[in-house]
Image (cartoon, rainbow, N blue to C red; front, side, top):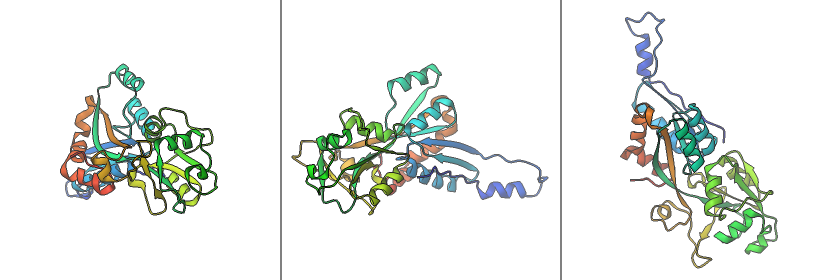
Length: 284
């Protein structure tokens, strides 16, 4: 998925700059300007939140860019973004670096996601255990016939290491083991969906909101095959689905006044309705 920028200046601002009393040479600045960067999982949610927020706040300007949680965290450290979107928590080393920069990082959970394992629709495999998923992505399992499927090589897709989804999957599904060198790293979640939809032997993982009819979602077991649960908003909400995770915004508390209006909107009933509409689980 290409990085997408959303930029909108209210019509009232344009009208004011053209109205009587202005010389025509005056430059008006937006009443609010915010940059948001990071997780591809959170990207479609932030895009919609920003669009609706700007529609109600003439003069507001919000830029939303993906690239991965790690990319957003680095940008926040460097002061090149106001809000970092993340699908994972901060690492100890990252927290230390923020402290060294004398940044007071605020962490807001804006919703929850059901991390979804997907395959090509023609794949007859319907469910996998955590241990089987670990075997696939570490390279111990290389053919679908080992999983009850057709005699066909497994083509595993993953996000790049800068992705919070990559980190979360490694820690919570692969038991912190390393990905096999044969796993194909993709720069964006949309690219994983597209590749798996076109490759019969493919498997990968995505945020629930990215699931489409071009791929098939698998049920997952975390009790060694005794029970399997399909990814869903309800399953993430009541925690019956085992690969649920929080989605975050991080920002510098010293600059809170510049982002508070938008963050408050995301956490409001209207903003949380958007979380559900996009395909994630609201906090409230």
